[in-house]
Image (tube, rainbow, N blue to C red):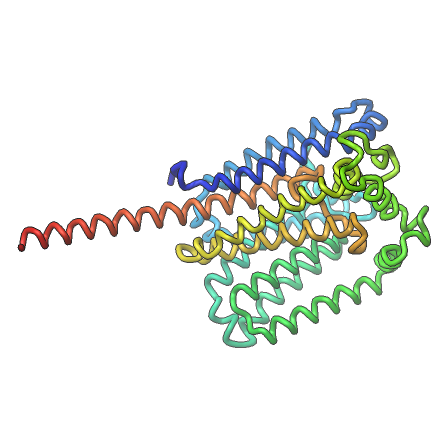
Length: 392
């Protein structure tokens, strides 16, 4: 089905393009010195980011070209494939280990982060499940337990990498989708308490996670060891003040703040753009998530599967943005999560664009169906009026 231009959400496309542009600019600003020192090419990461951006646009066009029926029909198969990826990444020699975490699979010149692929497929799978079995979810324990068990399986595979940040984002998204699907309030609260308790227990039982928690509570107590990254991030926020030091003038990106172009890119935004620049970037994300949520009711009238998926993607964008900004500003303990559409990272960029392309397609299909129904209604009224005039 070809979409007419008037059925495309240009506001969503505008917000999407704005965030991609900001991301390209900030990756260039945050990585140029690091690239020059380590690779002998100041534009090393910028070139790679542009390649990822091109792949993300191509991927988005492919996703946009596929009808909702495709995702609804093959969602289970794709979900199983994503579980296979999560298993493969744990196999020694197949999964690539970086900084103690085994999260990547090397496919020739491309490195795929399995958890990013899983984020997309998990939402598609649960959207299909809730659209088919939504009544079960609200009726009793059976409908409640089955999605919980699937979520536990995914979380276990992610924690084995380990990828605590993605576990929190995916679990939070699924819980949000369950609430939207009609789970009983007391079951929702029980699941929420159990999830928070489990995450807290895992943090306390893991020495390095406990160390991160201690560093989060008082980073200045060990500012040259466990608290180093957070203290350097906070220094970046402090230097930025209201209006920032100017684009390209960050000091913290000069080998003080590790991962300045990836997980902590928001710190460079705050340093170079100040509070105003940081607020503007957050406002773009708020507008993006709000735009996605505003489409859900309209899409639900035509396709409940698509509505659940778009809602899930909106929650995922909101959760990952909140966690990334919270970590950079010292509001939350350190987690290895990128800032969607902004941070350097091919898998995250491609999957984020795929999510938005899916939402764009879902909205366009709903608009087309509403338009067709409107045209049929008008024709029907014209025919009725014509018959009435003849009889008269």
